[in-house]
Image (cartoon, rainbow, N blue to C red; front, side, top):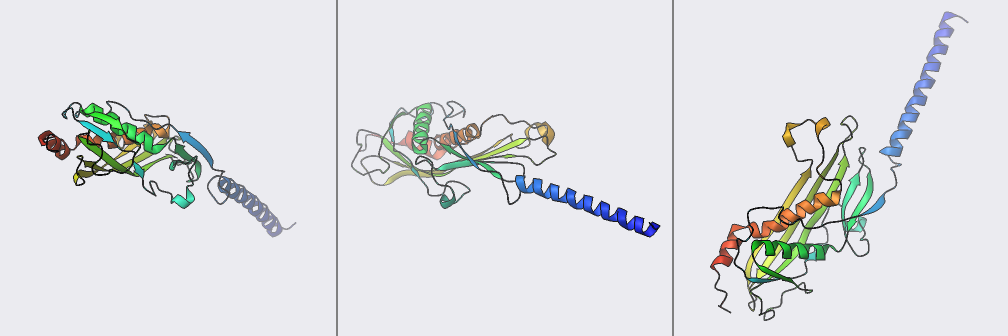
Length: 259
């Protein structure tokens, strides 16, 4: 075989090897982050209120009675349209688990969200110094609940957590981001006019953004489960209602005998 033919033969062998390697790499990527993404599973997370997590507003309200109505839930509380996030046992999707290639590997759900948030508001009101009770009603009707000083109605506007794995090269660190937002209206029975109206929201990152000025390879999450991260955002968002100075001043100055 002439030198020229040898060179051509070797070039052909190298080309075949490279093609095989590329095919294997493409196949692996397709199985992890391309068209053939891994199957998506379903997980149920525990979401709860963390008593005394938020400091500073405890016992800052007068000991008035307040009824917490069952919150309503907005049609779209997360990043995924409702049509693409079917409820599980009647409960809305509250988050996703995402791998390092951007594939959604798990859809996250929780227990009855409205009841969870209602109980959280009641616990927070008690921490603030009020006497709270829960109602199965979602809508305030003027002329009712006259044995209560206040009635609180709310709507869950956002309740979402995304836990994602950092791209390769970052020591496999997981990052979570949780958002919670609540619209609140407080009434003073028997009147139909709104006594107070506002929004309370919170976003929590785990690991905390810029925590201890560490690099990505040194970061570590505080919580093991995405439901715990969302619980922090929920707790801070709910406590934010009673942290609002304008609401506190309004209730402190309110003459409850003017019914």
